[in-house]
Image (cartoon, rainbow, N blue to C red; front, side, top):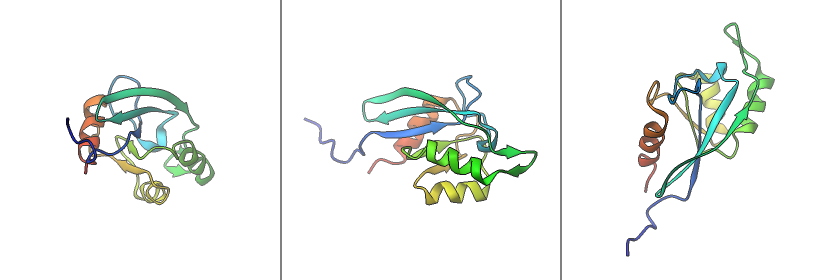
Length: 120
């Protein structure tokens, strides 16, 4: 029997995507986020969470950003093509790790790589 105590519990990861199977959208431009669960048994799509993007011509609407953060509050990770330092810090403060390390990567492979980096 394999000892699975080193594996984290199921994690939720949100992905900013245009819907073509890639991490290909800037955090501030997303109208929705695809949410997945990932654990040692694999990756499962959970739902699409619709939000109102907060980036308006290079400026961010702080109220809209806070609504997005609340919508993603149960997610441990957020994979994006790009995220500014301000939003990244605010997400981090809310317990959400925003990463652009997998920009333009395939969604499921990126989630798996992110998850592998979070195993004990």
